[in-house]
Amino acid sequence: MTDIDRTDRRILGILQVDGRIATVELADRIGLSPTATSERLKRLQRDGFIVGYSVRIDPARLGLGLLVFVEVLLDKTTPDAFERFSAAVRRAPEVLECHMVAGGFDYLVKTRVADMAAYRRFLGEILLALPGVKETRTYAVMEEVKSDGILPV
Image (cartoon, rainbow, N blue to C red; front, top):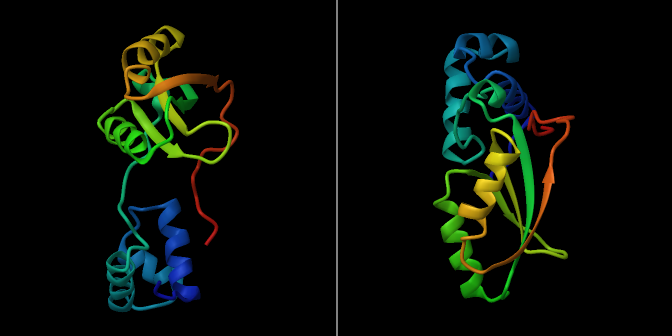
């Protein structure tokens, strides 16, 4: 892994809050020239510290107000079963995130839907149809306490 210095960390911290900041403004905030700042940005991207840029959208404005986490237990815990499930879940656009976890179940799935009726459809038509799913446990989110996703750099 490439080492990064304090200035690189400041750049990453600023970009997490405002990914659209102009290079000139970023340079001014960190005390470097725009050229030096641009070179640092290119290196941070090349070295994989910056993996992309995106826009955060209000899910409720799109009719996706219900956030749900689902524990998924597979019927088998073999490399082949894991691969089949992983490949299928990657093709499911309704799944926002999916993490293989250690513990009492195999995967933790995150999805957003309009309401409980929409979740019921997702569960029956998408999630339970994925290969190897034996059991699920659903956790509907009542309140999002923190969801900014900013890493401590």
